[in-house]
Length: 339
Image 1 (cartoon, rainbow, N blue to C red):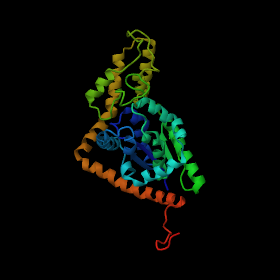
Image 2: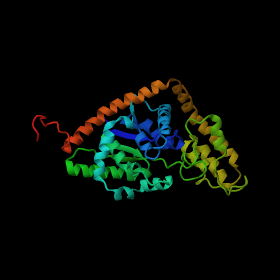
Image 3: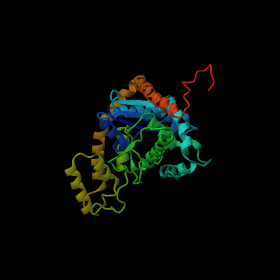
Image 4: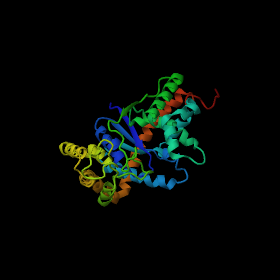
């Protein structure tokens, strides 16, 4: 049997180039080798969007369109919706007893995400405990592998801790997952900030029009010290060259442009025009496929609902094993005689 992979995204917005190079492209490649499940994590999206559920609901559609337009094949990969899988919520409740509040507060990923969001009314309990929900996701599917970036490594480690605690208390029931670290460094934003993020407005979306892509590329941050064409420039911390390294196929041309830019004599506009050509070639087929998919949204949702039914069957089996191990299945009790 193929090993199981679980991955997914929170439906809080359209997916962008950072998602594509960091995970989506990899998922397309992995689906031929593994039994892959992709979870639309709408419950986790609500942990910091509880007051705007319509945003989460609307973006479920956006995720589905992005998944299918990049080449994720529903005959190879099961796409499913988190909130429609009851076993995940039930497992989350059980696992909450296996982790302390102090441990959750020490999770580096949670700490950085809390700092980024700067909750004004206090940290929602659901947000603080979302590593537990994530552990429920991973173990419900019996995932052997979880593709993720280095920033998510603490989350997978927390899942492993919960698995070990459960298996120590109740028997070897749960599968301890391993992380597949992304080989691609995190794509920085068009503004030169360390992360491409919807909230920072420094993204190029997979669904952007050709004009939008060109506008964003031509407005990209470069080397602030490269004031004149004749000035030598920095390519290592320059978003334009970082994007060329990530998406360009003509290595000889890119290396030549780098050498010329570092020496002096190459203007930013010329490099940006080439990057625009590269990104247009990458995104045009994705955008065209997305436009076709948008014409039949009922079929898109059907794929997700059918995938969810398959996921429910798998995860309910995990839940049965967990409840039996915890002595709360009560199947063997004859209701006519109390035990």
